Length: 210
Length: 210
DNA sequence: ATAGATCTGTGTCTTTGGTTACCGTAATCC
DNA sequence: GGATTACGGTAACCAAAGACACAGATCTAT
Image (cartoon, rainbow over all chains, first blue to last red; front, top):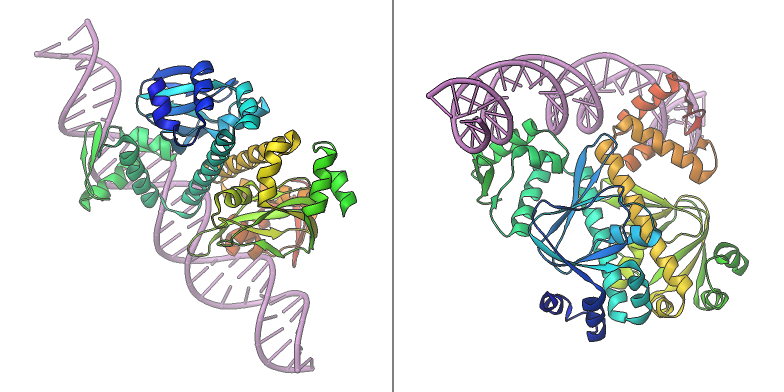
């Protein structure tokens, strides 16, 4: 696992910092579908993603969901970080999209390293920057695009994140992520199939050319 | 103006830091409606808001707009900050909602202070935190709420930010902020008027009880 | 005062997407 | 093997909001 740590952060972190992370960090392996963090949880450590992908989503009072974005290798969840620092409850739910390796770093260290390591400061900033931009994209998507386009974007992203052009999800699961209904998703997928952009099967979709 | 600086940041910044800001910062007064920053601009300094309010909005390729959030006293625009640090173009437009006083701080100082002052680090983090939360609220709003509710929320916020229960805007202007059409806004406002929640006039709306 | 521009109200129609209902088929479970 | 459940296809209907058209009111400029 420490190897993974070096591989992922060698370029941006000081060696001393990597050693410190290896020392105090808790390494965790999770499998696809596991909930890493839920709305209302208190958070005492922040996750650095060594491999795999995590999906981050938002839920309203009625339990309606919406996918916000994915975290990929080397990234961390700024929303979580923000919660840590503010000692507030999590505002989001994080679920492993694929099997993933994570190192959990206690919050106190976070602050300490901020003063001590430039590499860490930059990393934390860049994370915030990236998350803000992802959130802006999410806003754009739901504000300016219609469902057809959002679905296509969603499928593309899914193929990229999973590195597999078979999407192993039911229409209902896709509907949850896009915050719409199963019937609507089926309808639009059928349309895309007729346009030869994908092939529909039970429990999976083969993406041909989006 | 320096008085304003002390008044606004006394509680959270070290005295030395405030002195440094006073020294290198450029004080600017803007009047309502002035564009502070536009999409595509390069940014070399970040704004600290001493008084007034700034509205921050997003635009898509077709020129459709959407209000993201307001900045109020003591706040700064993290999206701008993110652009500064990343040396990328602005992703957003910022317009003075009311007459405002601002101090502009050069980016280089930002990094320097980050290592030097704990108060500054905390401030910058808290800003990111606040902006992320505002953006999450925006997402919630457009994803989960219908236009009726969004309009009511918008009007409430407007009253609060301007500290005036007369909203001096045309229906068209409101429609731009909510990314909808003038006709729809007129329709919904009329409905609210019939419910005695507000009184409609030419060029302004008096909010009674939302 | 007159002409033009701006703002608001309203009726009608269309589109997008959500809802309900029902069916066939594939998987699963005794 | 028969019952049950999960998944996907499809039709019919509905609701929210956007598009268009036009009228009346009010403001502005000359």
